[in-house]
Length: 288
Image (spheres, helix red, strand yellow):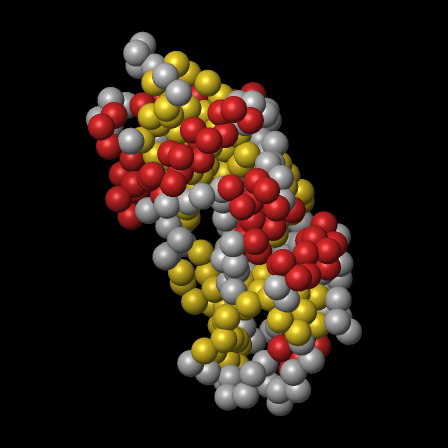
């Protein structure tokens, strides 16, 4: 590691952003240029990296965000954007960066650490002290006749409306909800969170996908959160028979939601932390 230059929290230096963006493109196929241009860089997204000259050879990031956990707001750390260029692997670079990133998180007094892993990285994170936890979707049978009252938003056309709702939103859950406007806008800019169905009467965006008789809900974004019975008929399409929530639905007035174990995200939390309890799931728009 003596052959590399260590840097962290360097994204205010715009001259270093291309190197950071390039390693994300090369390893993850992720180009953050559009996010930087349309939303602006988020100071809560902190990189830790080893450089060889002007090239980043290994990187680990911490995304600090506000999470409501069982009714209590806390500032937490999400590990993300981890990777090492193939020719520099097997040198312990990412293990060292992860150690430094976690030490920084503790110094910042962040109260909980989590990440979402690829299958081939599970062993690596286990060595760093992380344990896998199941998440839980919830499913309900449709009770309403569809009477659609939504318009599909487009970020280019409806940016002001989308930004207003994200910035004024109430958390989707009091059991496990998040508040991180620029991270949420990242998903909406890149169209990662499904179709954006806006119900004007409720001033609410329903992030969802619909197909095969199922409406999948990824987030509900607005200054107030109505009961699902008020939302459902306004966003359903014809032929939909069930709704699957990839959010924790404790605020939606659902008494008969069926929990479904979900491990596809490969959620990991730091060992001995109390971040995850019960049948909950992180909102998709809180994934970094």
